[in-house]
Length: 491
Ligand code: ADP
Ligand code: MG
Image (cartoon, rainbow, N blue to C red; front, side, top):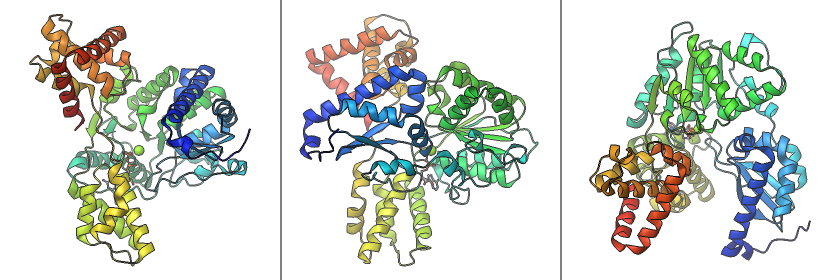
């Protein structure tokens, strides 16, 4: 395969963009066909193609763990598929996007030697801190039950409390301090919030605190749970895996929305039941409430909803200011000259509204700016430094329930009417519009949408979507109505 420098224009030309995304779709389809849905969605569901430069395809995944796993199990296969599907690609480089509290690093163009220095699971394990191994024994290398590494900075002391997270914070502290042996207060504690709003931080804080109290804690991401279970199955030690999970006081599982696959869910459900029934505390985080965890089956969802479910809302301005100030204070320990006046802080807090990760990014940019120029930071220079963060604010995530409520109000029917099986014209039309909006404004699949609309079949949803698409083109008033609803849902 040629390593010719790829013409820059190739990336700007929309036709090429389209062919690229088609080729990428083909790679994904082939992987799915080869590996089956469970394996595919577990390991490749969140693999993204970042860019292609100089014959190298840069791919990214959200966790270091996924990166190591793909690197050590699927690197060659993935590379072969990309080389086949893309004209200009000779090799791939895998990186982790958006690591906690650190600016996203753009992958460097590599030579094949880079693959040799990829982080592996044992390297991550070296960073393990404060983890009590079950029965006090050292864990063998690569043991999935060693848990994911805890970040030393993500403690209660560093977690700032505001209106949006006060309840979650209070519940987390209670759970963490509840001494070993006492019956758990709320079990499971289920925390949900959007990206970057502090779920992982709170979970790490609980794990640190509980470990410090001498209790046995395991912190796992959903990926690790799956990995642990799959490898236990392979080694035929599933029983051992279960037994050992049962030997702990607190199990913390992060990002449970990523748990995929039937047998893994079953196992997850058994584990939950066994731990809860024997009085062990469980803490879970996800990006949505249990009822919206559509990849999980009903029994798991109701078990998860059976304890205390708390949401952390978006960070209000006062809290954003506190977080920025704290980040600046900690940066000043290394850079005493780094000073940001209150006007600039309040400007940044007004502009960067999305999440804690972007606030970290903003402070990093201010710091870089101040180190490079040495000058005092003004609102103007701050504006230039954080411009990209302000522009890439994520659009609001639309919930199916909100669509149903809004459409119902708009057409003067009830949400129950929309979910019902009534077939009068006054109900059918808003129902179809709501299904159409659910399809275009959310990432839910047709069967999922059908289920959320009173257990309808996916063909009914498809019919509604087609019907409204057609009607919007023929009827200007309806078109305006639909546009208005869309805007109201997205703002
Ligand atoms: P999530 O897991 O919900 O996506 P994280 O816990 O990774 O979010 O938080 C993203 C970043 O924002 C982290 O650096 C975290 O320390 C910071 N952060 C979020 N909420 C708070 C808070 N209340 N106090 C201090 N830092 C916070
Ligand atoms: Mg997280």
